[in-house]
Length: 214
Length: 350
Image 1 (cartoon, helix red, strand yellow):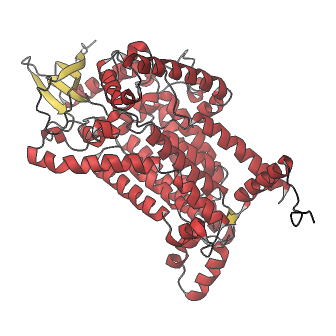
Image 2 (spheres, rainbow over the protein chains, first blue to last red):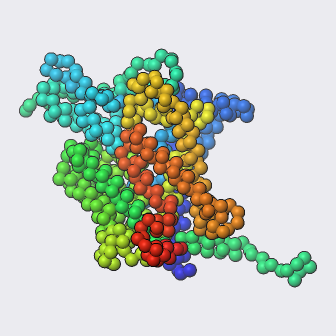
Image 3 (cartoon, chains in turn red, orange):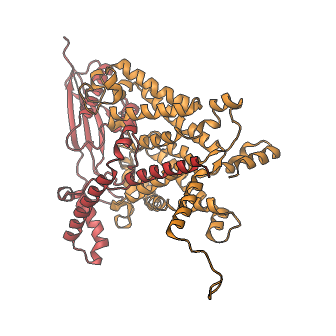
């Protein structure tokens, strides 16, 4: 074995150690506030079926989740601090969570165009076979990332996207007086679940009027 | 001799450490035919070309790669601490966005063609990383994975087979078949194992597990953000036909992802034993259980491509699968006659 072989093995050991450390699926920490949310309480219900029989009370289990996750995140932050700037600069990493938690209330992008008569006409409703204005463009993975899972407060990127969508709509529908971009959530149900489904809810709504000519 | 029998040399901690280090060095030192690295380079490059081409073909260059000042979806670049280097050096105009796209597309093209392959991989990696800072929400998990892969190709022998570099150096697109370091392919194997295993470990949501009824895929198929079909609008009969297969798929996905580290044992057996070896190592080499794992993976990604609209994700993942095979697995498909097969076999031997 040559010195080059030893050097290569040493470098690869460092690379693998670094990527191994950042691949650990920790964080963000679980907070009491987050855990109290109904969808997370459903998860605790399910896990109690497993940990209840071994003697853990619900309060103890929740406390454990909060304390252990906080400790893990603290240790992880300290250990990976020297590595993260390099990974960030190269846009590389090992944070994989492919559909870790399916979205039970997915949102759907809907675009309405208001005509000169003041009535709204829906031109895009994602997955609707008849309302497909710029469907392939606005549904594409990189574009979807800008409006999917927005949370409670729209991002700057989403606001810019909404303005861009409105600008394209004014080009494609010259009679339009305003354009409304909505994210509508629906509740998914298991097959055979006949409980009343909550009505669709508009999570975010942005109406943009035709800019006045200078 | 000792009273109990022949004397055996005692190996201390330092000796055991040295032996472990030598095993580690040997593990990364061996060489193989570069055809798989070339094939993966081509597959990944084509996926990136398609993706970057899509940006231009759908009029999204300025929205996704331009600053807010130029009509992009990113916030304004001026005065932004986290602005990408390209917009710290150049003004955030549509022309710069297009020039930046040209660098992305051009480097992906030369990388795919295998022209100045390592330099192309470096430019592609840096430009791709810069693109992820412009509109971070548009940068997905598959983009990070592909940057990891491209980073490996900055050092790999991806241009030694089916490439313009091979043609420049040897007069043949197929290169000279000279063995090259195998470690880049081994890193890609580890990358796949880490990715699938961590994806499995993070599936702690009850819907992936027995207590949630293995309903995760059912809900994912109803996610209008990613689903290709509006399953919730289907008839009850059509939904019923999907219910049990989706639950079976959920259970298989979880087990398959969590079982990925078993591949390490397979590759260790390949490295350290032969088909004639006794015990589990010989069995693994004779029966090739990794092929069953790969078959499930191929089915998994094909079904994803059919049912979910995730862009290049399933195709880019499949482009990496050749790393799970060995260069000698492909010799007989490529070599035209017995003599050249023997020669290729010899070249592919580790």
